[in-house]
Length: 103
Image 1 (tube, rainbow, N blue to C red):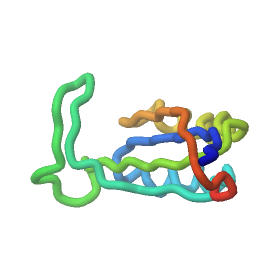
Image 2: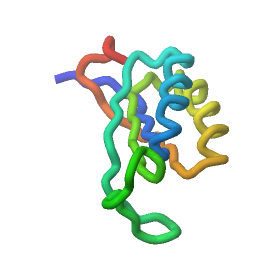
Image 3: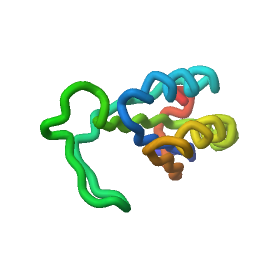
Image 4: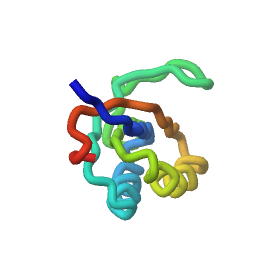
């Protein structure tokens, strides 16, 4: 079966920033994305979990999308500007997809 090279962009941010990230993705013409709750993790400041957190403040989400390699810079530049001032990370990795027309 033939596969096609694309890039997966993952963004982990505090929940209150989710709408701003989605607006940036929409503005960059990203065809789709998925948002997942982040339940726990460990970072440079140690372990954390969302148990006992009330409301969206202090909770995290992971947003991921798959784009063509030619679109990566256009997508991540505004994301970096946003995340560099907040708690969060952005990663880009290579993936292979079966239906390139979806991305």
